[in-house]
Image (tube, rainbow, N blue to C red; front, side):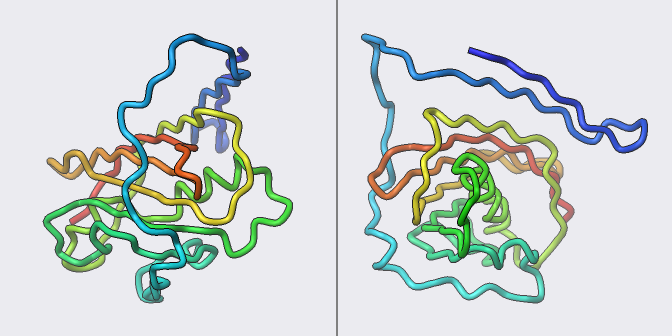
Length: 179
């Protein structure tokens, strides 16, 4: 196992601090899975989401997204959950781990499903776990759920599964909400 800490600066100011832990799979007698992949149909059973140019960030147009349940962004929903099949439009030559982390950032925060009009948001913290070495794939199911929104911040959990139903990423994010 190797742990690496990195500070990225802009001039003399800290812009990003990250800790990376790299570990090889190890044999173990202990194996369990508390819960599995959401029960949804395959990506081909859902329609592609048409993004709104007026508020979707430019990076969102690098992905094809197909809602598979949950709510849609800026829909005034009571259920702060996004559940979508997502794929890169072009990830040729991109390291699978980098592609997977980009996918994790493809959807807006789950709390945005509760918005009734577009408003600014900003990531405050983001923790990502890749439970096994990342492998290339086409479609990935992303489940993002806001556990709490209070006093201008949302805490959300996210999980990503490959097409075989294997969890390939787990994340937690704190998001500042400006509405």
